[in-house]
Image 1 (tube, rainbow, N blue to C red):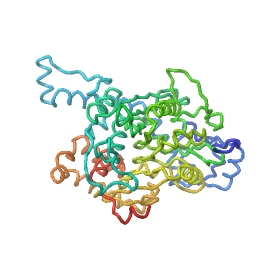
Image 2: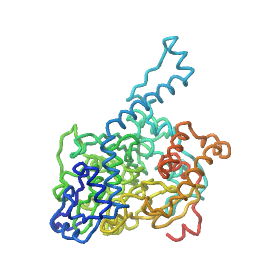
Image 3: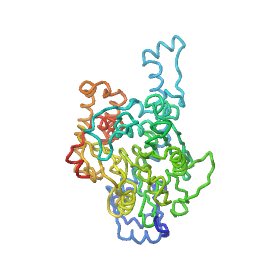
Image 4: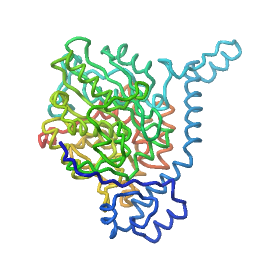
Amino acid sequence: MASPKSSGYMIFHPEKAGLLEIFSLCLFKRKLSDCNFIETTHETKLKLENVRVNWLLVGLTFLLQKILSLIEKPLALFGEVLEFILNLFSLNGGFFALIFRVFTGSVVTPKKDSADYRSALGFIDGRLDLYKTSSLLSYLPQMGPVDSANNIKLLDLCMMASKVVYENEAYVKNAVTKHWQMQFVGFYDCWNVFDEVKGTQAFIFCDQPEDAKMIVVAFRGTEPFNAKDWSTDVDLSFISMGDMGQAHLGFMKGLGLQDEKDYLKGWPKDYQGEKDKPLAYYIIRDTLKSLLLKHKNAKILVTGHSLGGALAAIFPSILILHEETTILNSLWGIVTYGQPRVGDETFASYVETHLNSKLCYRVVYSYDVVPRVPFDGPFFEYKHYGWCIYFNSWYDGKVMREAPNKNYFNPIYLLSKYYHAWSDLIKSLFLGKTRGPDFKESGTSTAFRLVGLIIPGLASHSPRDYVNAARLGKISKSVKEMV
């Protein structure tokens, strides 16, 4: 358990800084301690006395957060309109069928809470069925098939759960019960104390209703049209967690932190909150305790894509803080996809040491931008923990500590990133013919890849390539033996 040291913290407030001030910060490399939009403890401020701004890392982070705050409402509105139009066309059989339905008065109106309403990510990759195989060639070390899962690849199961959690509750329940033939436990729409919105979503399911061998927790990730989610991904704010080190403040808030300046007050072990404002960590922890009473031999997998991967990665750290041995002993592992960094080197080492023999894998596809943020640079030094399963553009996998190009804005990789963006686009046009209909690209996915030609690495973050990697990827035997 982390020692009860007084908490340190550093909170960035880009909303308090004007664009001219941010440009000045970048151009003249001012000291971070001189910035009036950084709130911190006295001890941390003293450490900042000799830290000058790295414009490539810190300056661009501030600028990006400022831009995101300015476009927050129009981006959300654009997303709602786009998703409504995509669902309108889909539910009515396409554009021309919709025209016919208009004249015949039989238009199907999309309903956001229905089981057939999809998010934009659901149109980028609409696959729902799990990929069954008897082959063990691409299994991870210690991660063989579960008997009750009918030889389903667990990398695929975790990724599909991480993808499906972006949808509404009815859609998720239908996927688990009808398509996966598993036991749906619950969908959780959780409160963020600081944003004062239900900004964190997750769901839990078991492989079978009785004597389950596997319990899966999946956290929702960064939503494409949610500027706050993207801003959280790149935020450099942190909170000290005693001996546990420094953890990303935004991700802690999403999980249920209640005090941003003191981790002991922020994470009370016993919490009684409002029923209509559940906090993610507490409701998931209590649900897992109840499930383990019923399924005594079950193992727990925690997963998520993007921001959901970050929440999955920090969830066990609070279990460790609270000494929740029942859940920790049943924890099989954490498997994330496109996950941003969640803490400093001390935090990474602390969590990894306490998880010991548990599986800690984060899957990274090509030049995906999100695993390369928040930046690992001077003073901040955000780190990943566990092993990285890195897939290149041809879904060849390697197990390593850190993916190539650890910081997204490194200019050395600029040409390579654009080359791979074009390569992914061209490959996607033929993958359905070479690998079968399961890998046929949707029009929405192709459009997103075109956006990725402008911002390389953005399209690599979509769930489609992560699902493809789980289904087509191979991890060489020699690399497996390393771990």
